[in-house]
Length: 581
Ligand code: GLU
Image 1: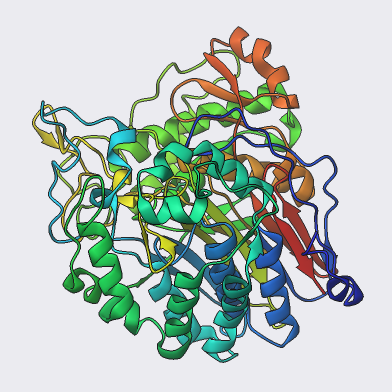
Image 2: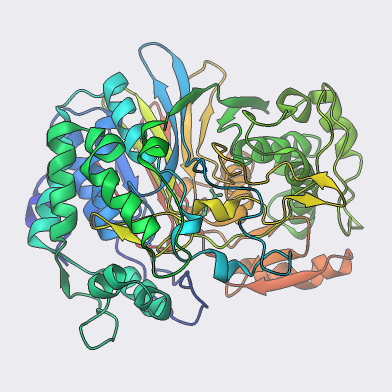
């Protein structure tokens, strides 16, 4: 396998093997195979974990050259755009948590896509006035939000980059030009989405063979259009994208889409801004856990779950049916609040402090019992809610996203979740990369019973996300854990369970990310099929839970930091890799 190059081994760096593929999951995402044995990687001073070995290698090289965590993240993101194109890239959006070790400062970067000026609230209603099926809304131009990832990379580099920008784009240029072997996971995703990709000429030509079958794993894929795009970006930063030739290609692709053409203008691109926001943080036992605030619901929901769990002896309960009962009940309560209150806080009032308030969560925790279950939790009434109550958005979303975590030699740390929404996003390509379908993260129905929905589509607004890049700190304020995952709204459950596994159950990061998933999104309990999680079915049913056993497709990536060094967690359900030194 090309990523296990001799050079890599000679430097004393370890990589984890790719995940095996299964192929029986409906589009757009493929099912999660599991690699058999996934040993943790340990390192002394710096480490990167991404969803693809080539991206990890690019980030590792940057760290080895003395680059910062942000530098490594940038090199890895450009490579991910090429080798894991179905999940993230400059055609999409991202949330980044950045720990500046010297300043002792945590910042969150909001590079979420925005709705173009022409996007109106009823865009996703059908001719009958009813929400259109999700699968009709995804493909083509009308789901494309103004991308934010490239602007985020550039701003992060301006603030925290040490190596020259062009050097960070170079690994992706090299791979795009000379070609890279299609990974098993990408091949599976292409095969899975073949019909949808065939609807769009650029995606068809790039991902499918000339006579129609999907390109196979191991075949070499070159991307001349992306090479051109990356060269422009290496030379001139984000300007050609937001104000120039690449932008024109995006505008033309959205307007000329074979399906669902729409209007996204050069002005929309020029107006795009990354927003530096305060992260949301809360104590959890002896730790302080920090995440991404609105427009993501991820950070607040994870913190609410932990705030509810704090009223139980999770360490004493352990990963038993009782422990899982408490976890899923807390998740239901958090999801009820999330669905009602969370959306873009630049457009609606979000009671962030109230949702995380100690007394509020203590009162909410009274609703959790070990021996009986809440069928469906109601949203609570948090303090400090000044807003007019809007209507909830309970919609479910299909995942296509990537998580990367990095620590550099100076102790700076990055946790980033990056996305184009569904697998292959809108399927539309411009400049050799895929454009997102992030606008389908808005509620399709703009109002419910005459009340506007908080997460309705509005021009300039950012769709509600579930992404939950997370950093955990110890009492002294030093980071001890970086984590996050793809997985649509299941991200919240994946991250919450892994945090409990590490912080309460004493598991190491690798065991925690590999553990079978148990979650609830205020509906049935979802147990991961073919894992130890499925063994909880009878015990949870006996407590009155409705239970579904099914494949659950996380991509949890983690680094634990301790005085003795760094330790990775790489989700065995994907083909990620860790490297450090
Ligand atoms: N678009 C989703 C969100 O922002 C993420 C999708 C995924 O995780 O795959 O919540």
